[in-house]
Image (cartoon, helix red, strand yellow):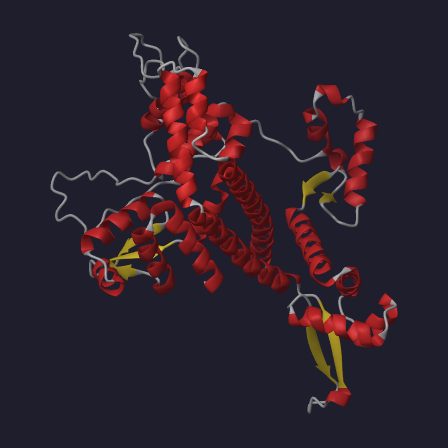
Length: 468
């Protein structure tokens, strides 16, 4: 764990759960697994507060526990899951895009509560949707349940592990902590619910709200003819044109699509590792150009293409004067975007008898850039918190005024009375609020953009490590 990751985890835990949970979570991230009393002693926190904080962290899958042979229970933080909290808004947005407002609220409720029963989620979401509907309209539990089943089928949600039932009537002494188990085939099974009703209303019928049964997924082949049969009708692409498209994709130097064999038109597969590598490389090139300029980016691309180059070769290929090329190479070398490899001609490593080759280690550069992205996200969060804190009094005043106006509108107040309440916030204060809103929106948008880069780099690094 780098200091940048720990700091970011600290900010995320504090923002979502408060100071006590943040203190316990960061302590576990720094020290690794520890028993309850050691955590309380080292953090100077009471046992009761530590227990409550651990309950919150376990509920949200941010801490796991393990029972050792001597019966000691140790708790361990899951740093990667803490960092995934950055992506919660994107999870909710994706669920909304694919499964409309119902899917959005289901995912939002589960993220807010960590773990919930399916019946509780269905009831809560149905009630929330009913509140937003026009008078007389309600949301049926069965409709929410159907969406929940679709989310489970596409692995957006999964079942939590449970304590297995003991067959013996005398189970003996209870373990110091429950041992939870779940098999992979049971992770996405959805129980049949007997919930009947719409929103907060109940009706007497035997309608089953369990949703549609899982449909058997057709087995997909990767040959040319399955591809052709899977094309939408509106495409109007003939078999010959499809062959030409697939040949172009397979012959592309980027190698995003691979082909093997010729039977049935050939077998095609998408090479995600190549695609991630190209995206990571393009990201690095973009960062180099933004930080050091277009000429440095030219040298970076040249070294990337040629694999290994001496300084003289860089000068000649890039057509840049020796002094400038040396300065640019040093900037990128000090920034860890390129590396220097020494190849001695003799065992004594004498400089006059050693080749000095510049190269780009994409994996190392991606890790360096990922580290900087973590620092950037932490800085953005701190800046957003500073902006909010500096304008705390004005924000509270604005909220009070909005609450008064909403209350008066509910009681049928006249427009003149509402106008008088609105004037409690002066013109300069409104301008200040607009500026704050604009700045916070910019910070939020920047945070999302940096997180996109984090996701790309993490995916590339993980894919590369699996192939090694």
